[in-house]
View 1 (cartoon, one colour):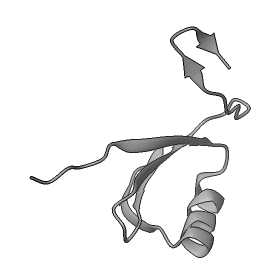
View 2: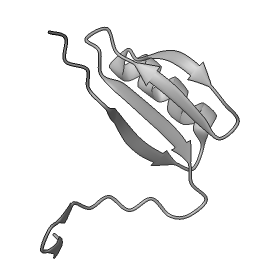
View 3: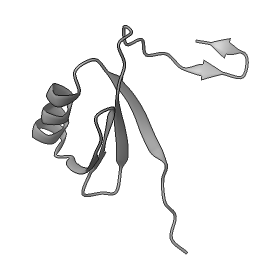
Length: 68
């Protein structure tokens, strides 16, 4: 049985610069490009979606009992 992972959604303010950074430093390769998002994959099978967000990027975890 093969287990596939989902995407990791990453909002970015500069799509082109973010794609370059993930390729250079984390060795992700572009799998699909769209004007609003880019799908990238690692050699180990990790898949990320870099999605344009005009709003300030705020990282937080949301649990069933609310944001942490």
